Length: 423
Image (tube, rainbow, N blue to C red; front, side):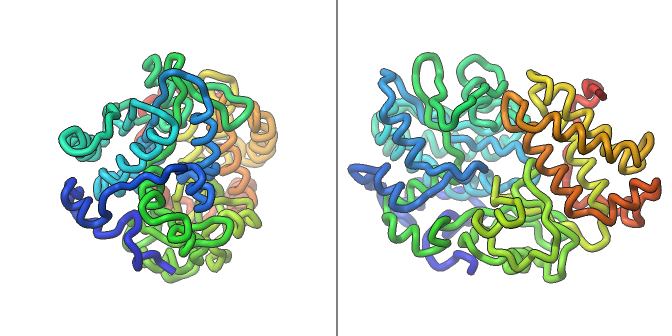
């Protein structure tokens, strides 16, 4: 079921951002419950940035910290090339996102809110800036709201890397052996959630936990924004009830055939075979396919596509986007991409490359300072499962007949290609 019947995340979303008066007309004033974290627990809201961690647990962790100064950070960086959901949300309902940030700030005792949007997304940043100025005139509830525009690299959106940038202008992820753990700006504790999560907090504060649970599944209630691209007639962002079959979601983007494969969760996500399109879109159902909702991305590969070439293109870009602060990122990911280059037929010996690919993936996995290399390894290993036929052809030195067609996954131009290290 596509979620359109209730005033949720994209309700009344038009081509222009909602003003303060329009926002109040659609959603009404924000009334924050006396124990917001309890309501969030009852609602079962999980973060929509990728990890799906229970939101109330993060809130309680920061609320219990004794720091004198606390911060709420809205992560609208969206460095994932296949994702457009947060920019669509901010462009439509910036005040809904700010409502959620203000509600969370009250709950944890924060007086500072930092809204982070990649500096390359100027239209989205301008939209949020106007909304912040409106808040200053009408309803900031004694909280300082500032817009920040970090560089729009993939790794800059990782929450610890984003907080690191806010603290000392470096987009380097921080090693955290245990999660959740408290991130800090100076000595102050930080609560970080992505824009969609903040907007959901605003809706739950208004309408309650039972309303939120009226859509979705028991374990994964509510709706989720999904960015759909690839071999579809209408690349788009949809709001769907969690548990909606993948086939119904694809049909809304104009794709009614059985796809070759789907990439779920983004470029650090998982490939699944197209035969699984009747699987419900929620983490419980997708776990059987070793996949998850992740960052809310679905990339569709048509029947005439080569999974090896697509995976190589993505891995090459992901290697280029790494922080290069540890061995798995600096050397492991370029080496993994090199093996895929050989397997795709671009260079070298494909048969040897397949053996190297598995060995290198095993060495990289779980050894990075952050989860960036693990995500790339997960995506590559899922390609080995799903694209067996393509891989067999490539390993024999014969690129499959669809290799030249493969450009369904939109990969941006490499910015630092000369810096790649082939191990």
